[in-house]
Length: 500
Image (cartoon, rainbow, N blue to C red):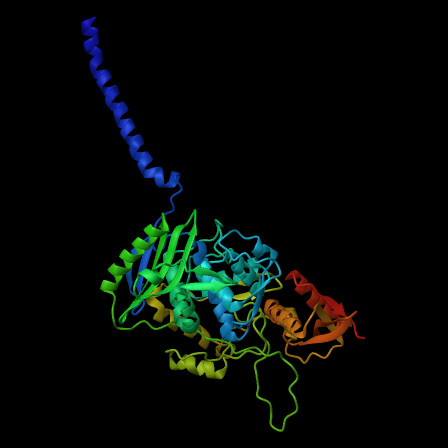
């Protein structure tokens, strides 16, 4: 019996050792899998020398991440662009919608129908990161938040954000809405390059609205010297995110951190990243901003008034594919210099010759989708090469051998003088200014469809009330019916008004 027990000892020892090994493996696996099982968001960080475009730090900078409220950086980019075009102003009233009012916090808590000035809406996004305001602003510009998200994605492609897809304007959870640290730094640099005046709003430390004071979620503005912006973000899936811009002396660094477990941990990592990056950053500015072109404030195409001298020629109203990337670019646009940038002489000649916004992503309202004919995107470290590539696309024109673009049927007759007796009415309002504002918004959303037609606020009385009908005039019967059908596809209520 003793001999038999001795014979079993090696087997027993082997089984015991195997059990221990399995236990160790299980513990190791549990440790390595814990972040995923616990739902801890993945980390990413990147820093760029804004003076040179050089990448100073990169950890998973090209890996997909959820942007959370960093999304609002693009919402504001499109808003700033429309301000530059003259389509919006800081005084523009943004009406809170039911969808916006129903959004999850963080939000201002406006009720449907309440209005907020655009300047206050911008500050609410920058400081409070108000989701309700972001949604209402998106609907004001794009008609629907889905349309606005398409605009955001198309603009992202245009400016070099190759791995970003937007599905909403707020950053609220959506599995299909992803970005990268590199893309967000590209966006941060573009905001600084293209909108230096508006960008200063990202440094707003506090915002007071209706007697309530809100502090900016970006605490580096107070606790880290030289910080001038720009945006925080958080969802459970993304973790705590931050894009920050710091200027110290002649140095300028922009950095992104994704996946912080808490706001304090995220801020600590950002400070460490900025300290390390500023030590390596250059004081010499060699990076040149990407080329950007703005259209002037749109003016409705109307028959020219008789003059002693020939009228100044303007370009015909563009089709949706030749319009600006903003929803409902105005009629008769010509290339305009908005601010001086360093560009090659060929592009300057093309600008003076009136080259259009050809090749940029366009929104086709009738189809409800984008035609993303964008330039090949490049990372922030090669912005000058990106500028050259974009300049080359602007130099191309039908006269230089580029194939002409087909125009949708609804736009082929946009150059003629509208003189039909029919009108399309989109609503009736209590004052003329409100009617004009809604007509302007309809023009923006219609993508050129309404550009040739005159907008009029027709006064009438209903009982003791003075009201104003918002109408577009100059249609024939078929045009009016077709236009109203397309407006309804954009969820713009309307009906055809026959000749009286």
